[in-house]
Structure formats: structure tokens, C-alpha cells
Length: 244
Length: 330
Image 1 (cartoon, chains in turn purple, orange):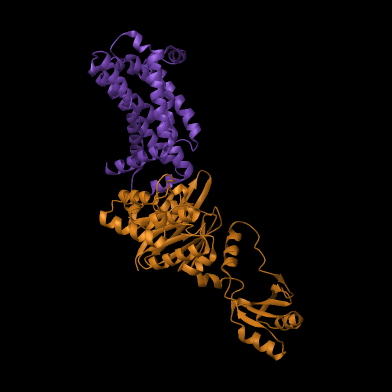
Image 2 (image 1 turned 45 degrees about the vertical axis):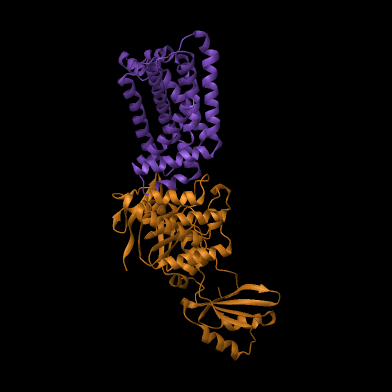
């Protein structure tokens, strides 16, 4: 646990020594706010809630989270520092977890910086803050799921751009698997059970409930499982790709 | 002496390619082992396996009695490693990097302070401690890489081309550091610089195409040179013909070569038959003919020649002719 935290701290400080962190935060805040006000017509709705704010998060994460996750392993492999890191007395699993946690904490910081939205809605009306908290947690879980997938993809390549594009694609499939286009694609040639299980994997389906304030334990378990499986695969990929 | 590193039958295959082929050797405390071989011979792969980065296809590696496959953590704690090219996190400062390494190595606060002080002093990096590593020169980066390898006072030190990119003064300092640390540790360095082997190594291993082709101390290795105990004679141009005739007349001399020519001074090299000492008969023969020479010396043999001969054979290339042009009697 101690080692995981040391790796995490180093990663996190690496984010903030590069301009990436600041660019990411600024763009995330601007887009999250812009979408809420203009597309979501938040003020015109006349409702004291943040539903239209949260509803756009998965779409924002679709390309912003791969941008955070793409460097996790690709950069390490490209510069050769992976050899330095993996020959220190720390296991691959610990490093995978440490790196993921750093990125997830970073995403959490960006998300927490949207607090003016919460202040505003409380100033304008009397929202149910429990629902808002649940939605924040849900949003962070979605970010975590995307991050774990991105980290996994990042371990497959030395090229950050490839990692970014691939990770976005993988995240898209996971997000949209409940949507009709993807469903009909699978329905044509796979049994109904499979189509339904694919739908169950949808981030969007699982998140929509949370965004409405229904933080079901099953949704939490779902996202944590996705993260767990992705990081497990991530570890296996790092191990397998070491010599290449 | 205790064996700190013991490698038995080590083989590593990447798909159809065999990078390391049944290599066995051990290193005792106090030894500095020079690891030589052409590029792609398997030096770095061997080092990566010993340090626990890659796993062997076959064979075993033991460091301080721990098996690398079963107890990778125990091994990683005891080894200091400088990977090829000294890859480091460019965004960190040397100080932050050293602290990061000490924390992951679970050093106490005292050991961390002492370790960092020692490494910083030995490698002369105190003036760049707080600059991002990516802004440092190649030489400084290499020295920071060396610092992180010795900061925990490891029992086994594995350095992949430690002096690559350093200027002659820095090379000299690193060699002194290696010699100084050698007594308490087992050190392995890979290098292309053969003079480095002569300067710091107590033993040299040559591998080619993944196979071990030599494992000896540098002097013995030198004596395998075809030029071992050859007699070098520097003399004026006018005397060359007479001298060559005299040397060719000696049964102990198998060949006479011109190895260098500076203006009207020529250097001849009389190759000794079977590498035996032939200084006395050569000198006697030259004196008898009254040939004037400027200088006469005994060639100990050239590591470079031995290296080339040994690795050329394995790599399936034709053995290269020895230095210079042959002058008769070849």
C-alpha cells in the first residue's frame, strides 16, 4: 500500500509539472460549464438541480479522459523509464494501481473544481444536495472506468497518439453499448443473452440512473468491477510487453 | 569470497530469436566484471534478466542466494541498476528522483540522507540537484542515473554502459568510483570501451550471438592476442629492409608487419611464434647485424584483437587480418 502511494504521488506531481494538467482543467471546466448553460439551457429550465450539468459528463470524458490516460504507460515505454521503474523493488500491480490512482485523483480534482456550479444552484434555489453528491460520485466513477480502460490501452503502445485514439474508441464502445446502434450490430449475429449483457456494460445506462440521484450499490459495483478488470488486464499487458 | 551473483544455463528467447544462449557465470564479492560483446550480442538482455525486468526462458539467476524468478523483490532490493541509456523521469529534479528511489527502497530517513549525500558527492551533481533532469546535459543525466543506482549502497551493482556520453575526465572519475566501491560489492559493467576493461575490471566476459565465448581476467585475455609478446621496433626508414630480413631469418618469428609509419620512422612488429617471449633472440640478432633502432618494446597483446577474433568467428564472419600489412614470411 505504501509503495502504491509513493508511485501515485510521483505521478500526480508529474501531471502538475507539465502544462497538461492546467490545460485539461481549463478545458474541462469551460466545456462542462458551456454545455450546461448553452446546450442544457440550465437557467431557462427553472429547476434547482444539476441534472443537465452531469448528463454531459460522459461525453466530455469520452475524449478528455483518454487524454489523461494516454501517457500513463505509453510515455514510460517510449522513454525507457519503464525499465528503471520496474527494476525498483515494487511490483507491476502496485505500479498499475499507483498510476491509475494518481490519474483518478487528478480527474477528481478537476471534477471538484466545478464547485461553483454547486454554489450557484444553492444560491438560486434549494436543490437536494444528496442527489448532487450522488451524481458527483457517479461522475467520478465514470471517469475512473474510462481511465482504467485508457490506462489499459496505453500499455499496449509506445505512441501516445495511438493510445489516445484507441482509448477513445474503446471508451465509446463501453459508453454506448446500451444504445440502439451498437445493440443492433450485436443482435444480428449473437444470441439475445449476449446482447443484453453488452447492454448491461453500458456506462451511459449505468450513469443515467446515478445522474438522476439514484446511487444504486449495483452501479457502484459495476464501475468498480470495470476498473478492477481493466487494471488486471493492464498489469498482464505490461508484463507481456516488457521485452518488446 | 562469496558468490553474490550466480547464473546457470541462462537462455532467453524472443519468439524465434535466441538472444541469450545457455550462459553461465558467477561474480564474487570484490570483483568488477566487464561484460563485452558486439551490439545485439545479448549483454543488455542478460542484465535485464538479472535485474528482474525480464524473465528467463530457461536457466536460473541467483543474487545473494535469492532466485530471481521466485523472489524478485528480494533481488531488486539488493541490486543497483543503471539501464542502458540511463532513462530517467525528465520532469523530476535529481533530488526528487533520488528521494523517490529511496522511498520505494524503504530506506530509513538516516540512510536516505547518508545515501543521497554520498551519491551526490561521488558523482559531483550537487550543482544540478534542483534542476529538472530533462534540462541537464547527457553527462549529468548519466551521473544522476549512476547516483540512483548507488544511493542504497547495493551489494550488486549492474551498470549498462556507465561511461557512455561522459567526457574523458568524467569517465576517469566514474572508473575511480567503481574501483573504490569494488571491494565491498560485486560489480558488472557492460562497455564497448576496451581500455575501460583494462583499467577497472578484474575479469572480463565476452559474449557473441548470445553465447559466452570468453571468461578470463583481462591480462590472460590479452595474452590470447596473436600479437602477444610480439616485438615492436621503431627505426629509420633506411634500416627497414635490413631489419625485416634479420627478423624473417629468426625461427621464433612467424611474421613481420609494418604497423605504423610516421614521416621516415617506421614501426615494425615481429609476431612471436606461439606467443613465447622472444625479446632476447630478437635483440641479439639485430645487434649482431649492427642495425640502429630508435625504440624496442614488447607488445602485451591487444584486447581489441582478441575481442574481434572471438566475436567474428561466432558471428560467422571471416577472421580479420591482424594489424598492418604483412611483410613476407606470412
